[in-house]
Image 1: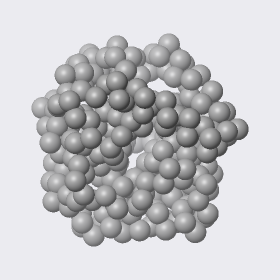
Image 2 (image 1 turned 60 degrees about the horizontal axis):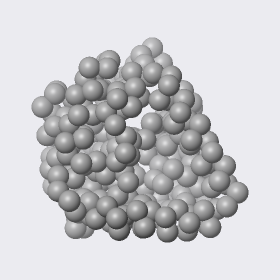
Image 3 (image 1 turned 90 degrees about the horizontal axis):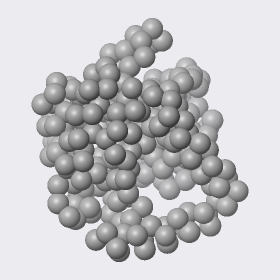
Length: 259
């Protein structure tokens, strides 16, 4: 699970601004090293719609939020290797500064990349929405993307890492066949007929060896991230809003040192 790739010193040029988003934005040179290591690690990345489930165990590269680096940086580097990625767009942000335009979304799709929903508004805690609010996020974003692309949109990813049964069930009700969440696991589940796929997240501090370990399914890096993620999940469940406020404060302090 990637987000943005930035070529210069200003992390806010692509995608969401601020410290919480910046930790998921990779420098250009580091992302290139990631791709080289992934290429040497195992199978070439595929598109989820081209997989025969469950007969194959494929590798997917996904990119959340819809930052402009998807078109300007990421897609060209993938295409150079003959790879294609999954780009998930929060539709309220289409055409805003730092985000993909309608034309760029069409261009990415025409090059064979998969365009999917990342909700409408990118809620901070999606699992805390009501079922009617969840259904609106999923159906409205799908309708918007289908109007732009002229083709069915059946794949989505959950923003913010806040997944619940209701999130998955309403995604299925909205017509999605595949939903990516943020749990670091290779296990595949079904929720109301929708495939639920976990992802190993990549941050600015993730080196190429760890990224290659995720791609190859090596137990060491995969297990370490799963353990950390489960500790954080417990903290989120217990502390809720205060956890997010503390995290935001600490990240802002780090952000000021970086930039």
